[in-house]
Image 1: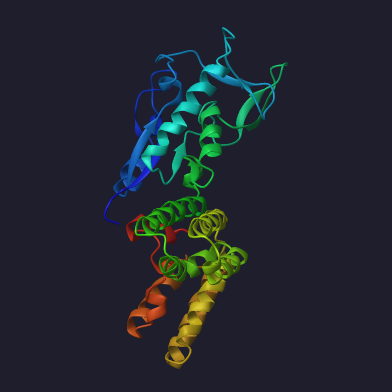
Image 2: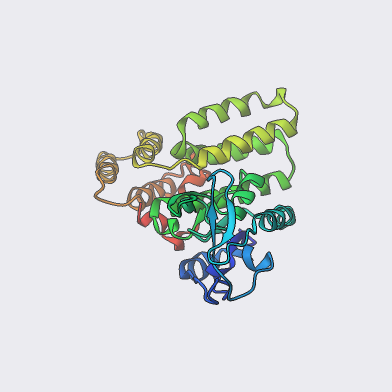
Length: 316
């Protein structure tokens, strides 16, 4: 892509000393690896809301669905202050064209899930959502979100990065003009990628595109985007990847030599058994795509959905 993808991130993860104790939570994967392809928009809810550094710690209390934000020692309730700021901040972020957001885990303001919520007896359960994180996800339900801790899981990491690159391509498709032809081209190129996440959504999206001429373009593109982001939010499992690999192998049945067919079957089988990562069968199929000039597969985003240097498929 010509430009870096714009991603929101908790400021402490980028090394800014904004935590309650004046420290940070620098994540080198974000800054040194992912940072080569994305431009971060830092957000620190607590500092931007007006709290000092250092500051008294905060925690969520009460109803997990609508908790209060309270200081841990002085017992000052800052719920309305944080909610008011968060509502204004998410509206400001509309102008940033973010394709994703990475939150600081466990934070009462930024935790995406499993944040501690305390009851009136002082006991906690990991069932809460940080106040700003909740406001962001409610305001931008189709923008991919993750926490820095979960990004150390190879499957979750690839899923998140799949989505931010896909959303960037989708917005570029819209920018070039919301035409039915553009939608058909986008869906054709992304078909196998979508299939690897959700065969059910892939079928539904195919029907939507096929009948697209009957819908107003704005309605059509909105429904497609909703399907696209919902589908890609589902994990691409080994079983679903194998289904796509076998689907691609079918395009070579008339051109591969006997030993090449056998090799491809064996490599897909090894991946299915967990003996090799996804990059191994993908490398072989990419080789056959070039060798036999498989034009349909050459257009498939699934074969190269994100920069090879990220090495995402080396670990899934």
